Length: 235
Image (tube, rainbow, N blue to C red; front, side, top):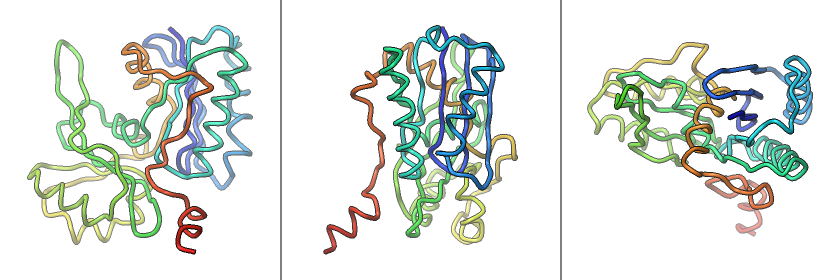
């Protein structure tokens, strides 16, 4: 089974190709360029470097949201266009779940933090259990958009060590120190941002469970209204 995976849900742009349990290629950038400038050229470079025939992929895994509204739209449009052209299904992978999956195997509670602006974070709570020779990710609190104080309180209620990761960490590091009362740490640089290879790994599991949609039906999961929609409602 071969998956093409895309993630443009945050500041990072990432493309990967996974075949069964093997990562064939990954191209990840976290730099001052827009996803409209980077995502498709990155995908084309991966395709060229591994002589990938796009017809050979079984599905396209996409970080489906929440995240940056513009980034999600670019990723969604890219995935939909490919899916329609190739007649391939889309595997929508929840963004926060995929970010948490970076920490697969940790004994700590995992708390991803994506900066959602307006004093909120996209977040959730997860842990891992070892069953039948493999680690399974458990969702303690589903992905949501809340204030940092609210997710910190949820961490405190669990009474367990927590590991934080995501682009919200540098933004809210001081508040974390003020609000979190349980032991905590921060993920290392190679684990603390979105990666398409992780989207592919989680997407592979979802694909095998039948969690797919047609390219025609795929849409991002924003979790909250865009700024333009909020302003229109306020008027």
